[in-house]
Length: 245
Image 1: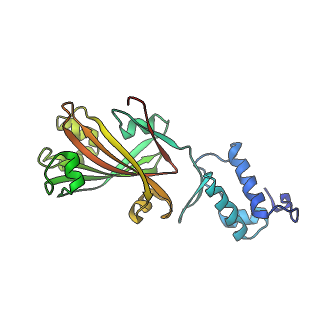
Image 2: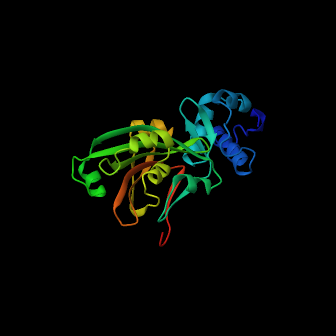
Image 3: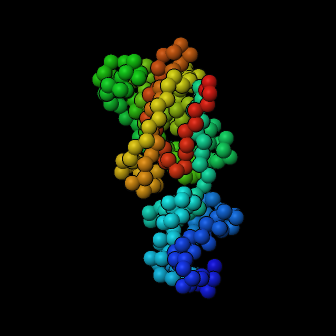
């Protein structure tokens, strides 16, 4: 890939020729998913053009979903989208691992607050009752894919905050609290603009939309256990509902 390879004055814009060359490298596997592209300065030198021309070519690839541009980090070949399958039992780690990706995550915050109307209705408690809120960041191969807020009735799970600090896992914490199994009652999916904090955590441009899921999980008796609101990076995850799931 050198400046001599470009057909200058042949009627095809230089930035488009560069975009086509880079696209070909990605499609045939010369550049692997997750691989970082050379910097604008390096590409400009390789092709013998200015950085503005390279920037336009990379922007075109980003619009096609072939690369992602991370502010302050660089440009990376886009990984395959995760099919996040919503089933009767949906667990983040199992779903991500099922795509041969390494699941990980961390607890961002644990707090108590008064339940607002939507939370109270979903958990079938009185508005204003105390709830434990767990904020989580979910990752696949070290790449953030979701930011989620999980709500639990404080009266039912008074020791949850201490247990989650010890286990670092909602599923294991529920097992410790005697809820060995819980299943999905309902999940709603919408799309909206990302809030600044979510965009920062998801490492995506503020103007890129996200997917938002609202879910209620219940125990074996049908009693609500958890209400959650998750914000997903829309270019890394698609939500799939399985028939009868």
